[in-house]
Structure formats: structure tokens, C-alpha cells
Image (cartoon, rainbow, N blue to C red):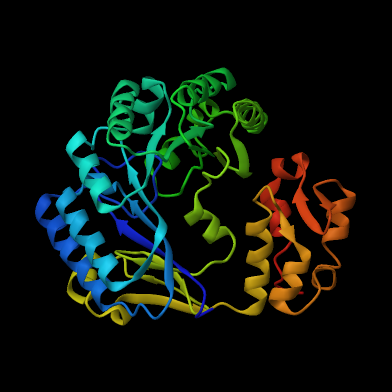
Length: 383
């Protein structure tokens, strides 16, 4: 893997307000902590061993990176460019939330080389946004989107969510229609998941209010009506929850799904590097004091075994519309797919959740509806 290109992820954990459904490593903070964090992140970047690998994509996520002073972000990205060999055509993405950006910020982002913006919209309906704990309205999103386009950002993703409390299929479609009317290059359409420890989990999981959430049939209706609409508007579904115009797929995420190695920088950031997985400490005090010694902040390191790599090749690959190439499986792992999974995939073909065409395996529509248990069939523990 040492000769292959690499992806970078930079974590900015700060938010204006924690959303009710969010379990990401993020929190509200003041300027002083943000400044200290930016300095520590720069130290970690400088101390990271770049090797000789070309960086093909950089993703600045969070949290809400756009709450950070843009000059501090510029300082961070300048050090990335100094320390790593970033390809001239690298995709450099940044997450933004409406209500946290200005025209001046977008101008600086463009100067920094950021060429892709991902907006966290979630819904075009203000009542749904309020329930989610979002800090913005639909109108404020429209203004933020307009500012991005005015600054010359020509690759924009918009995140939307289905399965929200009180949401209907018609309401979800209305959100998609409004978003498509803006002509973004990419749309990520995720279903709400009740994550343990969040306010939404406490409010809706096994409580009387759980009935406000769409049931399984309603969620499937939202998914398939939404997918049909988006594909009819020229957005192809290249991964179960992701749609784009041709050539505007998120290269960084495709890297994750196809097993490309990545280095995560920042508080709690995860990495897959030289066949090992690890993540940085999520203790801010430790991070600030030890960031200049990356080996000291890395925790839970594990070697990715051949078995684990085979599992991930399958259940990440099957989420994508191109499915998995069984010949590539054999080239990569030195053993035939139909031997490793001889007790699994013929049965899944028989019951109609998988289909096989020209040496590739795909989830069927039926398989997508029950994707989690289907993908779990490819775990090799106990084989």
C-alpha cells in the first residue's frame, strides 16, 4: 500500500449548537479553545510522517468547520500543503452549515483551494429543522447557498434526511424538489438513526413519542420515491444514500468505500494507514498537550487482518451501485470469492437479495430494503 495514494481527513469538532440527533464528536466552544485547537492541529500535521504518497483528497469535517475563524483554517490548510504532496487535481471538501458562513468566508475558502462544499441542510421545512435542533431556516440556507455560488464554488453537496418525526413521503419529496431546483452537483440523502446517548434517542426510543417516527414501510416509501425522483432529475445513485451528476461523485467517500487508506488528523479522527486502524484520543486536554507527538495520541490501534479486509471489501462495495468485482476480490486477496463465501452468496442469490451480472455482484431492490442483515451475512467470524 505504500505506493498508493492517500486521503486526509481534518476534524474540526466545534459547533454553534449541538443537534438533537447528532452523536458525532462535536461541541460548543469559545474562541480561545478554538485557537488552541487550531494550533495543536497544525502541530500534529507538521509532526505527521507524510512518506512519499500522493494525497488525492482532503476532507475537512466536524462538527461545523465553518464556525472556525477562516484565517485559522487557512493556516491549517497551508501547513497541509507544505507537509504533504497534495495532487494538483485533489478534491478538497469542507462541511458548512447555513448561518455560519459569509461572503468573506467563502472568498477565503476559494483562496485556500477548497473546491467542494458540503451543506448540512437536512430539511426544507422550518418546523422539521426546529425539531432537529438546527440553527438555521430554509431561507438562511438559500442565502448561504447563494453566497457559495457567488464565490465561484462549482461543486456543492446538500445533505437531506428522511424518517424525521412527523415527516411524510410527500414532505420529504418536497424537500428534494426544492433542493434539486437549486441544481447542486451532489445530494446525500440519509435516513435518521436514533443514536444512543442523543436527546433524540432519549425522546423517541421506546417511548410514547416513538409513534411520531415513520415506520419501516413509510421509510422505504420515502427512499424509493426519493430515489426515483432524483434519478429522473439526472442524479445517479452511486451509493445507497448518495446521488450525483455524472463525474461529481464524492471522490473522498468513494475512497473510504473502496478500501483506500486515509490519515485522520484532529481530535478523535480515525485512520487506516499501512494496514492498521487507529484513532486519535477524544480527550481535548490530552490532544492539546500531545498533538505534536502523533504516536502519543493514537489509541486502539489494530492490524487489519486479511479476513477483516475481505469482509469490508464486500459489505462496503455492495453499498455502491457498481457492486463488487469478484475477480478483483481474487486479485486482492489471492483466493476465489465463491470459495470464501460458498455458503453465503448462492443462498442470497436464490432468495433475490443479490444478483450477479458479468462477474459483479449487486444488491437488488429487495436487498437494499434489508441491506443491513444482508451485508451482515458476509461477516466471516466463525467461518
